[in-house]
Image (cartoon, rainbow, N blue to C red; front, side, top):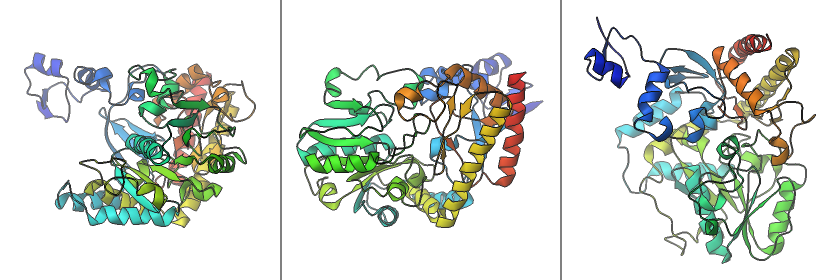
Length: 449
């Protein structure tokens, strides 16, 4: 009997005499088969390094679809998802308002290379929510946003030096790929091959949560206001305000990387939570409703140095894409003050449930909460949540790998790296969190046994 399936293993199909979309008696595809086939066309079989499971071992599951708080792999296994596209999804997968907005926009055409009303409306919405963003320019990713911010800061100030912090991750921008968190921390890399020394010669990497003494050569200080790429590390009191004051003292720009915290922590992001105003802010993830997007917002006098008004070049064929801006508008429209209250409560409940379950099963772990973000730190090296990258790196990565696979076996998806955040969203309602608690407890009991 022939059975049409969405994917197949090329070698098996060839042996069975199948066409690429029909498998005779082979059944549904497997995660391993799809991954092996992907590796023949894609380096490492993945399009983002952390997805390859190198730090936790094994092979990745391959997602075929998602809805709400859940994803399904190609074998039909259902997982409660705490990855949520690394924070890009806040309303839940395939949210009806977002998917309908995308369908409507696609019906009007997918890209024009010309201004659109949707990009105007999304820029206005960001400006309304984040008062420091007097002007907003769109691009296609958080990495493009940070690279544009570097160029803009240097162009405005006439200076070269950029300051970043150990464990902060600002995307794959050469000047910022030094001692980063997230994937770099997971892979144990201080930077990356292919970035020459001169590309980072003007980058200072300093300890997070310590206000540095700057000099007149510094163009900008880049910071994650909440360090979400090293297990969620909160800013200590006075850190962000101290950066603001020190930048003002030497005439440098303060740049908040709110790719994760923007519209995730609060209606106005980290700037609203901590009452510190940035000169430039980088956005991504939530503002695209799950589609690729990035943005830089900031002071009018700084932003208007971008071309065509100023001498700092920026352009992009797909910047302000009508599908991404439609999805972003739909997502932000749902993010009301009442919803943020619910998300804050759900994050606290998730962290408390995890603490209780891990403690009951004798597994040392901490789950710091910053707003709607939940972090993880494994092992007994610290008796409190980490405050900087050196402390974050004391997490027990081997223990995390064992926990990761135990949870995966019981239908719970975490990020395959020990330095990522847990993302709880609008779809993680009480019934999902109740079910999650049951699965986590069963997984940890099996691990302890």
